[in-house]
Amino acid sequence: MSTYVIAYDVGTTGVKTCLFEISSQIKLVGSAMARYDLYILENGGVEQEPDQWWEAMCSTTAQVLERTLISKDAIAAISFCAQMQAVVLVDQSGRPVRRAMSYMDNRAKDEVKKGLNAFKMLRSIQISGAVSASVKDPVWKYQWVKHHEPEVFKKIYKWLDVKDYLVCRSCGAFTMSEDSAFATLLYDTRRGKRQFSEAICRMFDVDMAHLPQICKSTDQVGQITLKASEELGLKAGTPVFSGGGDASLIGVGAGAVAQQDTHIYLGTSGWVSTVVPKQHLDISNMIAAIVGANPGYFNYFAELETAGKCLEWVKDHLALDEIGLFLDKKHIWEDPESIYESLYDFMMDCVKNVRAGSDGVIFTPWLHGNRCPFEDHNARGIFFNISLETGKTELIHAVVEGICYHLKWQLEATERHVKTSQTIRFVGGGALSPLTCQILADVLNREVETVANPQNVGAVGAAVIMAVGLNLIRDVNEAKLLIPVHETYHPNPSNAVVYNHVFPVFKSLYRNNVKAFKTLNQP
Image 1 (tube, rainbow, N blue to C red):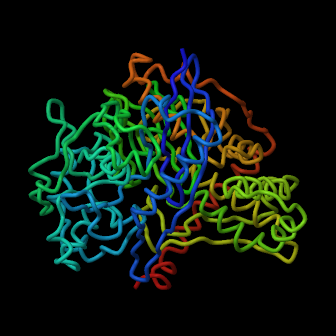
Image 2: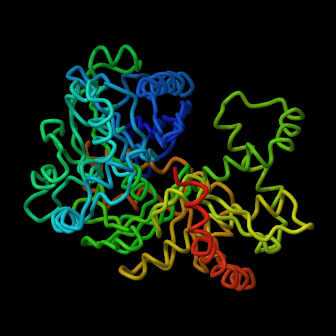
């Protein structure tokens, strides 16, 4: 029998609402996307308006039901996959007391300087297996509000992440799934603990009354309230499952759930993640094993701040004139997602004949600083080695290669501590392009696999969570049975030789320019 569920994939710039049919496989029945604002502030702040997330959920839910003709009564459950390490501060009614602070927010530099020392780092690592060492980590955003907005701080009832705010808006529950709780870096991961740590909260001056109840990703935490049902257009009483963050559920949606399974994600951000049985921490490369949605396992996680965001920048600032002509000729597409995918396809088609190595041009994908394998919010993008022969096609091609070089750097750093799989699952919007898939296979010199609808894997992961919660499958380990391989890409040996030659030069660009980045970008 088929079961229908709705999964909300809440990203940095938009929400994708997916209606799935779960039977022997997870089948996408229909989807809709709506975008919202990302506010970049001069002081390093990056914020979003939570009401816009909810409004986007409501509008896309209506679109999906209308397009698929599936009755709201047939929806068995809803759940979420969302961006992580945001700080959403709410009052007792669940309403935000200020705009949400994005995971990209890096304004709390003074809070880090004053609040972090060697003892706190060591103690945090002992308790949680990680440490709030980055200016972008949530506790510093929390402290920034305390120091700069004391009147707002007094109104706080709970500290939530993006997904957990939307869960609260849907069913009234103030909860955090284990992966969201770990992402605060206030969570005790030791055997028999699995709760917020009083010791870490005391060290970082966090009021534990602000922290919500912890649950599993597969837990039903409530039912859609009457008020939420009227706004969402779904049936009151529909089960709401906690779901998870993108860093944990995208791997599940990729089918990378067994020990040593490695997947690479290329969306707005990007990462390399490997399933491991115990925690590992590499402070020098800013890689940590994070709590995931699959009990008993961790995800050894290396993040790239701007991945697909670099391609969006290319679209807006390099290819805009060509793309504008293209759109004028076609006169199609009302759906913003279709427009984006078509423009991306068009760009990739334009650069498909550029030779490996982009005729010597190298791009560094650090448009908003970088987190791993080096932490530097001053780092920026570079086009290196441009010549008179360089054109837009080489520049665009170099951007794709630069992202793949950085992912290889992260994979290389990962393998210093854990074993990765020889075959890599590649997912996210970037995996829609056969050219990008082939470049990644060539740069890594490894076999790369994709799945159907790779841009929806976060939502697929949320569907797996609901399948477990609704007792349709036994556990998250069975995800792979529901998610078959779609395409396989084998490395081109001649291209791999070129990329192996260029790769050390790519890595040297940060080391050779770190002082210049600081001079130009340090406030």
